[in-house]
Length: 381
Image 1 (cartoon, rainbow, N blue to C red):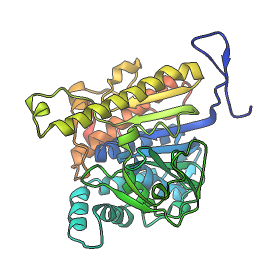
Image 2: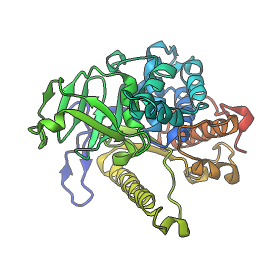
Image 3: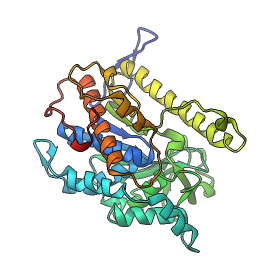
Image 4: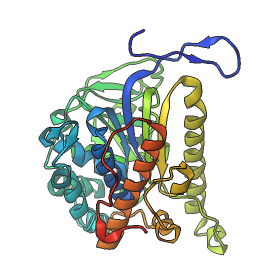
């Protein structure tokens, strides 16, 4: 079949027909403004290597959705010359940096709490719409690449995919061509519970369609007002919507798990600690499944994580990075509050350096100029 590849079963000699979509997909993980800036650096290097313009799908979660939202708004204005967008900086990176210097989460809480008509989720959407996403709607996005913004449905407990051609929860059903603001999709994807959550989408007047496995379709309450929270609650890597592509690029700015002292087992700290454990386990399982299944399925995967040691890629010409400078970046906060110049510069440089190493290690033949720090004043050496 055209656009698919065959993979041999790892357990037996029979051929397992695994259908893979032709093309390359990119996943941008969650992790607040830390993730937004880390992914911005990765986008710069992917663009230099002429990979950005070849992407078929971009799947994003939480902080990754902030970066993807800005990229989606600017996409039609990007000037690609020989496969490289010459204006990615002013159209995408600089607006993201300006936005990540603002106090977004506390403003959203204050505006939502002081209003009788507006919720915190509504306030978050308004900030995104007015200060980053230019009031764009989902139907104004490009057809290619397809941008998919992932949120979690608090009622069904499953992922909600919001894209230009559809909005879907596999247990509830699908709505074609959803006429909703891009800012609402990004707000739902990044609505960290319980502070910024839930973000609602009134779907009562939408034309829902049943699809295979939609066991909740007949429940009208499920197709009413959707109560959505951060996509990271279900899939912080954003893999579920792209894991059938032949080539996967995965940018992971998720927090590495840390061992806690007494505070982690104290009565008041236990609920958050339990959530951290569950989230880390789910993230680790998805990552392991991805890397173990890829060779069996015939996939090419380039993965880079914020807590990865660049030396692990085994490239003699990887960018020079001092461990004592890079390691603290994985422990930076994941809030939507101001990141200063140094934090921004180092996160962008780290995402750039790791994307460069991962792509050159796992996508042989990738062309691009010799890497150089995108924010020279905050080199990681």
